[in-house]
Image 1: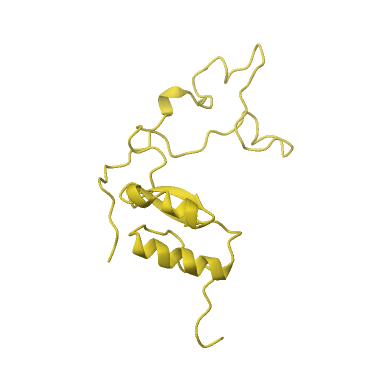
Image 2 (image 1 turned 30 degrees about the horizontal axis):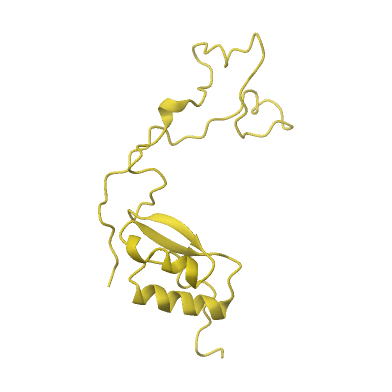
Length: 134
């Protein structure tokens, strides 16, 4: 049984390309990750035509679809059963993702409990050994 979200609105991204740092293409020492230009004569800060765009509040996502995955659920990181059971009443909005530090034994328990509570798990098959190997 595939668990479906309560509502699945169309997710519209105002911009999908990353904002890149001014002159990061020119110098290797400058990483591509965005930093706001602060120079008094900076062309990007002064918004000259043909320069990089700067991130601002207008690029924000719709509040209803913010952090939403393509499946229509919002993801919550889960480390143990107590954290999983918090999602019991919100299983049409949120789905669980089992944290990477959780052991294979505890993962199995979490996946079984999630099935009982009808909570979708994004990574149910991680670290599961096949029966032949055991």
